[in-house]
Length: 182
Length: 182
DNA sequence: GTCTATAAATAGATAGAC
DNA sequence: GTCTATCTATTTATAGAC
Image 1: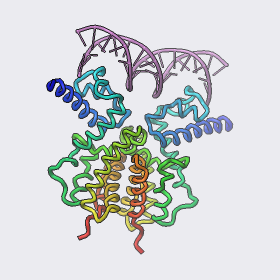
Image 2: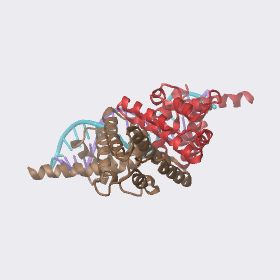
Image 3: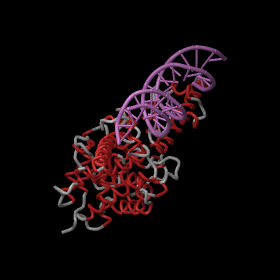
Image 4: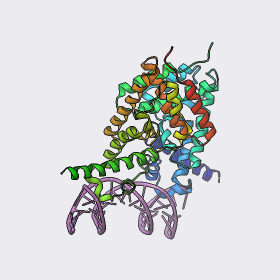
């Protein structure tokens, strides 16, 4: 029994990990259930034993992506908003040269097309981001501004065809991050 | 001849206007060529006399959306960055209670999935936005920050399930806009 | 240039064997 | 729980009549 439960858990986690990466990189519509299951080394038919629909998978994958993202790991937590920005607002992050980029930036305009389960999940993850930013900001208002500069800056930089323009934007956002006043 | 050219021009413009609205509201994948043509009161088959592909339409529709957007109209141009923000960072704009919302915010994470024609068009429109912001900012760096606060703030607010949270975010972004120092 | 009809491919979801 | 096979629907794009 324990093995069976473990086995199921392992498959579900593998699906979630595949979905988190694929969705974050390509968005909801460009990724099919088939893609996800292939990456998880399973077949389509097995999908519905774990998730009720593609949307259900999407919502859970966003949480997974946030957890797998480097930002959420306890180790190497930035000690200031500037460090936070140097870590987040990079061309490597924008160009997805890491395994798990931030879903808040990569999926932002994808989310409003989805159902309530998805938007609730996104809101929860964003709220955690803001709480983290508050630790290094003067007040909540400044934390919200810092969050927008980081997430929005990364998202827009990603949409630009001109990489140099994108780099300039990342730099400007980094410079705009307001630290806790000493 | 003139009538024919005019007739074709009218059809193309009708298609573009329909596409601009539909794409801005729902993104690239959720809108089909059929939807666009139905809204333009034409049939699918007529589409390819005007555009070479759906992507081609998308790119041209982004330009059209930017032109149709209230922000690009000459009349009622904001005289300061605060006015700009009050005009842009509203719940009405976020909830698409206007005919033509800003494609820069509504489509930001949609764009990176598309081809070069599309990303170039987005870059061009964003560049115009920044140039406009520069007129009311201390320098280019501050203009870029202001642009991110507006476009990013609106985009994230749109993704949040909690409207009050979204309103708080819009408010914080408005407060964060830095004007030209007097 | 616009129409109807259709080709060709893809995707979400379900059925039933093992 | 996982597999293969399939249903059903949708979509991009093309062909050919008017």
